[in-house]
Picture: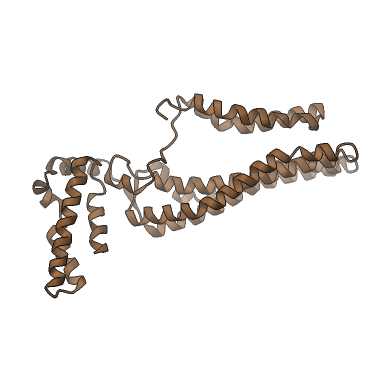
Length: 322
C-alpha cells in the first residue's frame, strides 16, 4: 500500500496546492485503497494488486474530468513543458549532504586560521618580528586556501541554485529526519560559540598585567574557535534548508517540506549586501581599532555593540513580507 501512496504523491507533485486538488487527491487515494483491499481479499498477491490499482487509477490525465481537475491538470502540464523541474532523488540528496559537510569543515577551518593568524606577531613579534610576520601571512594564505577550496567542494551541485528542482516525498522526509538529528549538534555548536565570544575578554582581566602578549592571543583563539563552531554548523544547516526549499510551495510537493523555510528576501541588493558584509566589517573595524590603540582590554566591547545592532540591521534590511 505504501507503493500506491508514493505513486499518488508523484502523480500530484506538480499540481497546485489548492483545496480542490487536495480534496480530489484524498478521494483518489480512498478509491485506490478500496480497490487494493478488494483485490487482496479476492486472493490476489500484493504485487499484483498494486500493479492493477496503478494501471487502473495511475493516469491523472484520464481521471482529470471525473475528479473535476481538468483545468488544473491542463495548466500543470503546460507549465511543466514550458518550465520543467529537475527531480532530485535520494542518492543525489545524500551525496549533496555529505559534500556540504566537507564544504562546511574547509570553510570553518579557513576562517579560523585567518582569525588566529594575528596571534603570531602578538606572541612572537617581540623576539622574532620578521618570522612572526611570515607566520601570520602563511596562516592567512593557508586559511584563504581552505576557503577557496571549500567553494569547489560541492560545485557539482550548483544547479540546485541555477535550475528549478524538486525532491520527492521520500527524499524530503529523509532530509527532514537528518535535519532533526543535526539540530542538537547545531545548538551545542552555537551555544559554545556564543559562550566563547562572551568570555573571550576574560584573559585580558587576569593576564594583562603580567603577560600582556598572551591575553590578546588567547582572546583571538577563543573568538576563532567560536567562529569555527558557528560557521561549521550554520553551513551544514544551510545545506538541509537548500534541499527543503527546492519544491515550489504553491504545489502539492511543497507540502513535503518545512513551510517555515522560505528564502530570505531583502528590500534591495544594497540591503542584502549590508547584511552579508556586516560581520566582516565589524571584524575589520575591531582589528584596526585594537592594533591602532592597543587597548585590547576595551575594544572587545565592539562585539557586544555589534551583536545588539545586528538584529536591528537585519529587520530593517529584510523585505516587509518577511
